[in-house]
Image 1 (cartoon, rainbow, N blue to C red):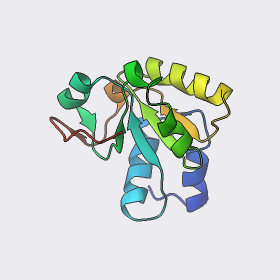
Image 2 (image 1 turned 45 degrees about the vertical axis):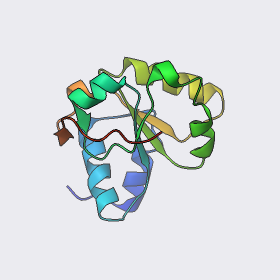
Image 3 (image 1 turned 120 degrees about the horizontal axis):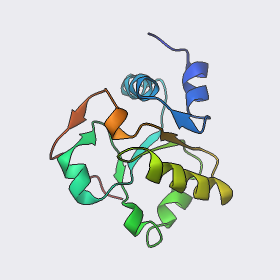
Image 4 (image 1 turned 90 degrees about the horizontal axis):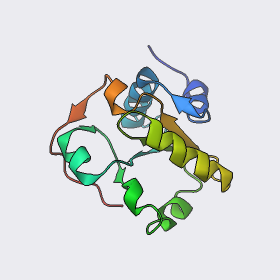
Length: 127
């Protein structure tokens, strides 16, 4: 299904997104229709086991306080968070929204409910 730029942008304004929505956004980003950052908040061992193809940043929740400046740098860009089941990202998103970060959405089913392309042993993206 093809989405308009407005429909894609609206997906990035919600608090949650589905697997199908993230797949559509990744495809649109590949085609240059939209831009966003895909951030994995799981630990390194989880990322190397299986990650979503196209992840831009790995920022484990255990390191977030030390690397909080990353969110400041991304404040004006839409950021899609994902974890294993959606509970960590839901908590992170809630905390960040309370601090004024409004361009953050999370993949509500996490990678366990993601049916798009994934990778094993992908290179770790720098945070």
